[in-house]
Image (tube, rainbow, N blue to C red):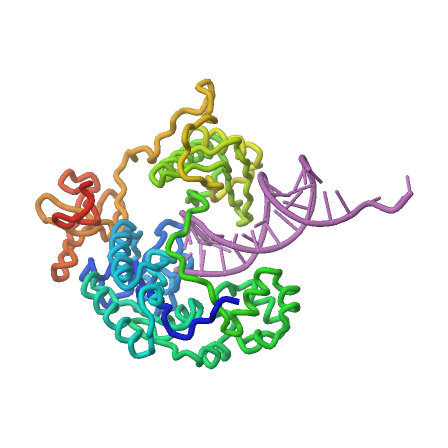
Length: 443
DNA sequence: TCTGGGGTCCTAGGACCC
DNA sequence: TCTGGGGTCCTAGGACCC
């Protein structure tokens, strides 16, 4: 048995409505307004909704069409991941000033273990550190974060969710079960819709109900690993460490088409392009892998995968493409498919030499890593642009040969709208992240 | 007008090996 | 003649997370 922590030294930070908050920060006219960030195509889903948008019933993972129906006047933006990544790096850096043991869960969430560097963490001291952290995050990024702390990851994560947004909750050691037991099981990490439904049919609704169930019964209901985990979590027993160095297990790319695709040539073309992207990402991370997987989704949303393991690891675009093509050829796609994906797993650090690259006589050409330049320029809502005359702004919308730009930035008051022809040579893309003067990155 | 994209972990069955 | 038994690797699918 690992020792159970007695001090509330596990901290969890969660940036509030992260993507939408960055957009409102950088687009003054959107502050206080409903903003939805996510897929903007016909098959898009919501990634993040601002609190103003949530008031209309819009939430994460909702189809964009449904979100538009709920609030047609919301700003629907495609997302600027370079900007989100830059903010995330700043916040993770602030966490690392508190402790070397920082475990990011995503761009907007991380655990930190305060006990790594110091002991004597009582509730008041943790509260002070957490309040300072929130202030530092706000100073550095302009965003609010919710912070929770407790004697375990489970409690810290639940705590950060208790007082959102801009929350700060430290759970007093010894009171964990008072907090957990009245909660619906759905609040527990790893209890999703399917598990909640199984538990409901077994008469288990709250964490207290769960704690009252015999472990062997839970294992019978949910399987070995999940049953045992939930038996422990329901009793507040969680000794999972904060692990700062987690290695990647797979790299994959997938794409949902705007319409179902039947044309074999189009699928092959996309397969090659995705293989090239996977290859580029592997190389950027100095990784290579042995197992290539192709994923498809049918019109009825049924997903299938086909995978094969090569004799040795590869990061080569042509090898991945040729393997993916072979796997794709095994799948009946005559009914049309809505999604295609290519991935590599079984990763090792670097491929010393690519002994298993495809022979030169293979018919697969070296694919272009990026989609071909579209004949017509496409502007995405939310995208950063610069106009030679009017300065910096963002794309509000585009259609019928025109693009509408609002000229404002993070540091200006709300700006004016102007419309241009989509091929106006004065209008260019603008990098979302402006390099700081003298900042790292030149090396 | 349905349902993204990037991941992680687990399970189950079959092959294969000793 | 009544058919071991465990370990590892591989493949496919599913649940879950943000």
